[in-house]
Image (cartoon, rainbow, N blue to C red; front, side, top):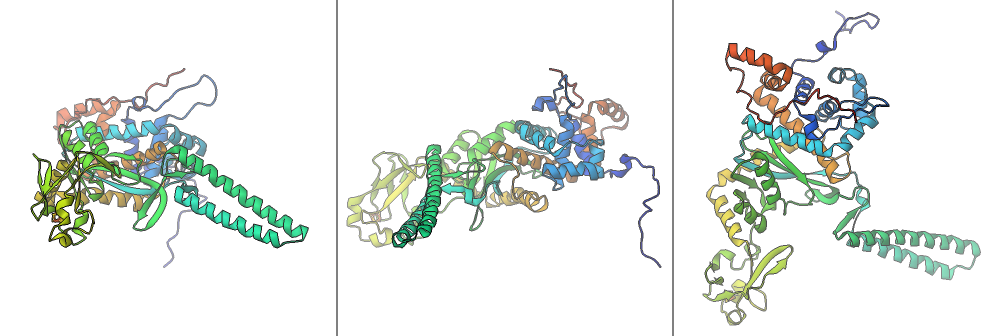
Length: 508
Ligand code: SF4
C-alpha cells in the first residue's frame, strides 16, 4: 500500500475552464443572475472613451463582487488575487484580471446602482411570488465601522480628556516652580507645550461637534456612530435595518443611520410597502421599535404594526399600575383608583423626542388616603400620555390578541443576520460613509436572497428561470415550453424586465 499521490506536475494536460466549474456552482448562478440585470437602467455607467485603456464592463465587475461577497472575499486585494488563482473566478471573468484599484473604485462609485440592483431583484422575487408582501418582519444588526473607538467623541469624552490635560499641565507647572536648572525647565516646558497642543486638538473637535448639532462625532468615518454591539460592548459602527418577508424569509429592504431602532419603524415599513406595491401590510417588530409616533404613521398608511409593547415604568415600582387608571376619551381625563379625576391643561410637551400631555390632580392627591400605594411624588401622581396613545393601545391589543403571530418575528428575521455575520464574516464594513456601507449591505443581501433561491427552488430550476430572462435563451425556452408544457416553472410575468447584458457601449 502507498500514500495517495497527486498528479505529475510535469505532465502536459489539456483542459477547459468550463469543466473546472461545477454545475451547481455559485459562480454559474451569479453569472446568469447578472446577465439578466438591466445594468444601464440600474445606473451602472459603461462608457467607452476614444483614447486610453478600454474599461471593464460593469457586469463583469458586479459578478466579481457577488462571487466575492458570498465567499468572504470582500477586500479589493483579495478579489484581485482571486482573479489570478481562483478557477471559478477565472471562469466567471473569462480570465480578466482587474487591478485592486479598479475593483475598489467600482464599489465606491456605484452605491446607488447596487441599491437599485437589490431593489430590482426584490421586484423580480415579488413577480415570481417568492416574496408575498403580506407580512414583513423588521429587525436590525450592528456592524463595526472603519473608525477606531478613540476617534469617536461626545461632549463628555472631550471634557474628560481636557480635564486630564489640565491636571497634567498643572502638575508640570508645579514641577516648573520647584525646578532651578535650565535643562530641567526646558524639558518641562516642552511637555507643557505638548499638552497644550493636545488640548487645542480637543477644542477643535469640540467646535466641530457643536457645529454638527449631533451628540457625537467620528473623525475617520463621519457617518459612523457609537453603538452597542452586544449587551455591554460598545463600538463605533452602524446599526443596519433589514426588512424580511414572511414567506421565504427573503430580504426586502434595508437602511442605516440611527444608533438604535426607536425611529426606524415607519420609514422601513413605508419603504417596504412602496417597493412591493401593496395596499396593506403587517409589520412585526420587537420592543425597540415601539414608538407611538411611528405606530401612528403606520396605521394611517395601511400598515398594521405588531410591535412588542413596552412596559410602563409603574410596572416596576410597586405602585398602582397604569391599567388601574381609566381614560375617558371624550373628556380627555383619567380616573384614578381612588375615583379622582386627573385632568390635563391641554399643553403638549416634548419629552426625549416624544410628544406628551400631562394629567394630574394635585389637590386630590394631597389628601388621598391611599397615596402611599400610588406615588412618592410630593406633588401627587402625574401621568404622561403620548398624543399618539391610541396607536400604542391598538398595537398592544393586536399583539395580545395574536401572540403566536407576533412570535413569528424571530423566525422570519433573525437567522439571516447569523448567516451574514458568522458564515460570511459581515461583522464589519470595509467602507466609509453611509451610502458606501449600504453598498456592502446591498451586495450581501443580493447574495443572501440568491443563495436562498438556490435552496428554495434548487439550482436547476433557478437556472432555468434565469435563463428564460436572458434574451438569447428566452426564444429557445418558448419553443421548449410549447413542446414540453410548463413543468419547469411559471411563465415569466416580470413586466419591467429589460435585458441589458451586452448593452452596446456608448462612446461619449
Ligand atoms: S394619589 Fe392621587 S392619583 Fe393616586 S390614588 Fe390618590 S388621588 Fe388618585
